[in-house]
Image 1 (cartoon, rainbow, N blue to C red):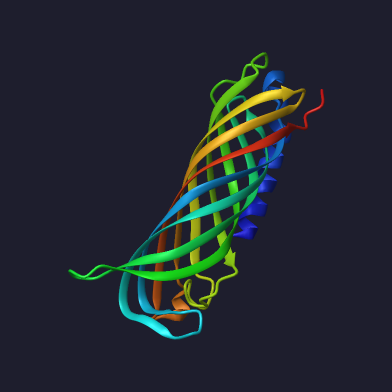
Image 2: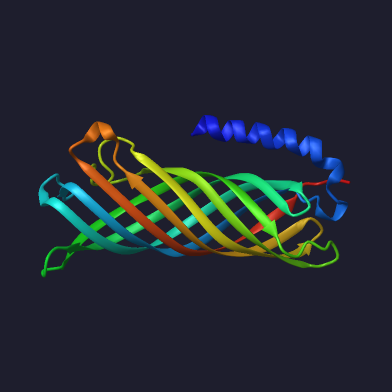
Length: 231
């Protein structure tokens, strides 16, 4: 995945050099920025394994289906620039803190809640594309659609097997609305409501143990962007 990101960055850089003469002056915005946000994550997971407490004792085993919901906090850092008059491409990294306190174990006729305190951090790397809707230079505000595609890792788990014992297959995709407002020359503040889907599946090396996580995040972030373009 890292090699793919590097190749993508090289291709986009080459294309930017080729297309500079075709991008109108008003659309030459090369942003670097950061944001902070809060949200909710909903989990839909399957365990063909065992759930452990923080002391390593089995609390549930077998073919387990579970649901959970938890608050999360996130920080996002990005670089993005135009490759045409209607498209910006860039890269980003983000860090999300999760706070689980209970899970719902689903079984035939006897669903039950279980205390399950867990905190950890998800580390994301992604390619992003932004489609500005209103790009007129004389406007103080603009709108756009933003999408991410990337992968994630994690750290800080108390239960070693909640994501298995090895890094498995994982990816993320998101769709957001970007609204920014120019407060100073080359300085913009923005707000971004976002929906993101994360998928995780344990490595084939761990069979017959198999863990799947489907996580849907709903969040809203606010931040600041700086336009690095100099005429």
